Image (cartoon, rainbow, N blue to C red; front, side):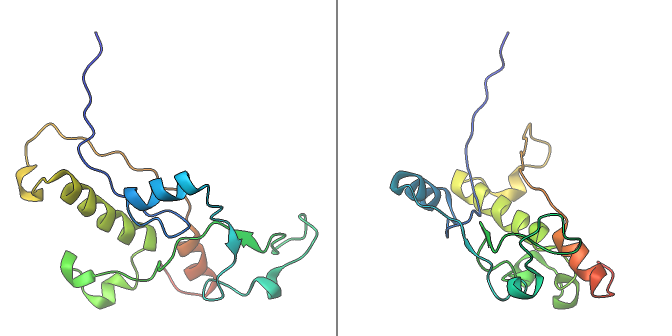
Length: 140
């Protein structure tokens, strides 16, 4: 017997400026291509580029689908000190924000979830931030 599933709220951060489900739907409806050049604040694509995909330590594309404002985070809202926030991977910071937004979208007060039958599904991947810190000689 199949169990019923209800999606009550959603949040997202996607390339092309889709910071919420409505913006994502708008991108889909308009057929927007969210691929663009590497933002200069991420890394120097020209310095790392090599047309040979097998060249070690190099990139062979200057393009990607990048999220905007990966450094922006309201640490105080989540009770995190500025010092600690600098070491938290941007994916984890965004996860906290998006999870909160999904609860807001659903109209669910977070303090009402304790002991409830609630599931959270997250799509996330990569470890670029920790790799970047390690390459700079800093521990994540």
